[in-house]
Length: 230
Image 1 (cartoon, rainbow, N blue to C red):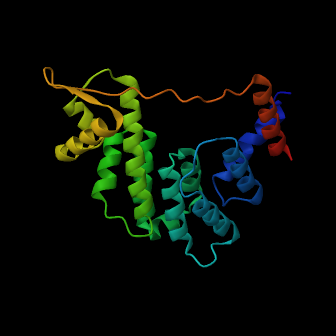
Image 2: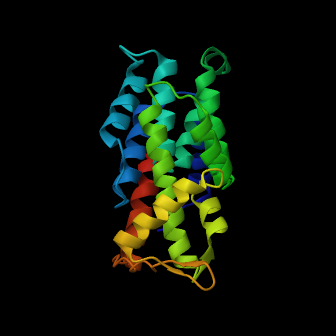
């Protein structure tokens, strides 16, 4: 069973409508269903679910602007840029004006979307985040650094200290880059070549992730389309 033209049109209409209003119960259930399709660990998942529930019910006990600031931060913390973008689209212009923090958070989101990681690190480090979102932005910085380290391990056989500091967001703080490198040497087996002054990363062990069979993929797609149609 493959999506029909009518189904595709319905999905596009649903997407356009989704951008301009709050989550309906069906859309929220769809988000939960999609999350269930992934084995990825979601940070602050229970908090995000509670915030989504409060948004759906009218943000009882929490100002809508504060709620959106926290929810947007959690989405970014998990690199869930699609949910973050949809959330930004359905926030009214009046709310964005009343809560400048929303714009500051979304600036980080835009840089993530463009893969401008140095700009992300600068924004995270140089912005004074209020206590309501500070834990999420701090977690985002660390998550992005760990992601960069994984990419370095996969992409580089050797790397200069300058490039290393640049990729992990410590281009303006070389002392922090040295501390991080010392930790990697002690805990993960990274080494340095004294002759060439190059850093030699420890290649990560490939994760043993079971592949989904074609039949399972087709069944999942069928369930997804059926969910949208009903």
